Image (cartoon, rainbow, N blue to C red; front, side, top):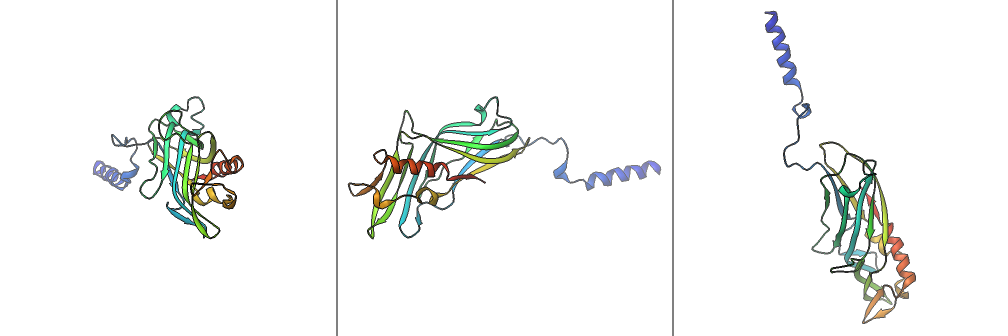
Length: 217
């Protein structure tokens, strides 16, 4: 009877244990447990930004994208991507960037470097298209450049744990990109407002806005 009583206590304890908390249970084969960077916008594109600006298309070339943390000091290759297209329009959004071999640890920030492609198409660092109201008339605009290198360092402070996936969402503040542009001051060519290497002051201001337009979520 004593043996029977002990056996019953052990059985009850085993049944009461949460099956989701069982120790030493490996993840299912094929389950992704690394780090994923997901690129999103804070508003759907195309978008109306206030009364005087519409944005139709955003293209950025992520020439270098790195997730950097305490475990990546010696070797950042497992968490680095190159020439990753970031494109938002009515039919397309950027694909995520997955790092299956990302080391476990805290990821302090994500570095996003926007620059042109030395080879291949398209070669621009960025292209943004839309319309702006000038003298009460809607006029198409194009913001594009090949040469600038824009570096955004995006604080994250998120922890990747063993056998558990981590997704860091990198959000673009669409309205912030265009908030400081003086549309009346831009030159017009072939019926289109142009902001590019021929307008260096406006281009430098836009690059500063682009560098500060991202946040991690």
